[in-house]
Amino acid sequence: MELYIHIPFCIRKCVYCDFLSAPADMETIAHYMECMEKQLVREAASFQGKIIDTVFIGGGTPSILKPEQLSRLLAAVQERFTLAAGAEITLEANPGTLTRTKAEALKAGGVNRVSLGLQSANERELRLLGRVHTYRDFLRSYELLREAGIVNINVDLMSALPGQTASSYEKTLLRVLALHPAHISAYSLMIEEGTPFFEQYREDEKLREDGGTPRWLPGEESERAMYELTGVLLAEHGYERYEISNYAKKGFACRHNIGYWTGEAYLGLGLGASSYIEGIRFCNTSELDEYLSGDFAPRDVQKLSKNDRMAEFFYLGLRMSAGVSKADFIAQFGLRAEQVYMQEIPELIGSGLLEDTGARYRLTDYGRDVSNQVLWRFLLG
Image (cartoon, rainbow, N blue to C red; front, side, top):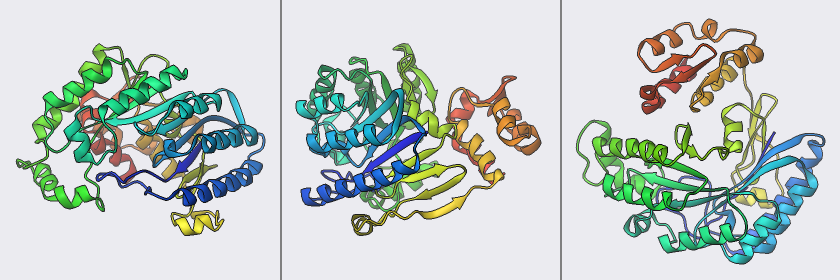
């Protein structure tokens, strides 16, 4: 079972971000952490005897918390839940928000994996994204974590940024690779509705989608070049691509995310956090005032049908390079996948998007390049 804890606060909202996060004063953050602990204690009592394999503290920017707040939260997790031996405990952090004291508090509290949101090593691109840090801030944060004894560090990167070229992106990749992080997540920028970037670049995005030449965003060929460059360079440096956007040194794949993609149960604590327990999906309130009033009642409760669960088995599982197991599908649903997806599987194999390895179905290289076209077939089917 997985545990997710949401800290929805940040120093400043990035202009591309559509996550449930916002700046807040220290009093609000302190009140939130008190409510978080109350919810944690209440939920932990309902899961006595359940073994927690992974913990992920995400945001927002969890690293803006004070060292004593981080220590208290981590202590509560350790005391109230039963963690597996060697449980993976991850915290998301933004460069510039870490101090030596915080890094040491994380290590002492059991954090053994940190995800650092660099996004770019180019100062112009960082300013464009609205990031509050510089590349030098990132290097200092990375160094502090290593000095504290945390070696499992992920670096988040983004490509296809406005004005970015394959050459500038390559420089970012090479700078990061020189540090030998355990894990790298590399995503293409998504222009999300409701963000300042959407207002600024939505016409450009539509132009690119229609095959035209955008004014600010990289064109389709340039975006494709960045995508391919990521795979080539990271493979040359010993990283295995175990999921569409995630690469890891041997033994450092993110166990928490693998749990999501393989249908593990997860409990979400905090504002707007989602849970999936015994085939039922629900979430916490997304209204901060309600959460701060102690309203932890589940929202949007949905019992997934067998068809829903089968679709998610493929939709999520095919994101992984290993693909999905035929035997696991039969064990979970009592049917062969070919019986359920009689049309989708043969058509996708015939189109060169999916392959049958005998024991598993997985995306081909071409299928991974256009993965959304493949994955949605199972949801629609």
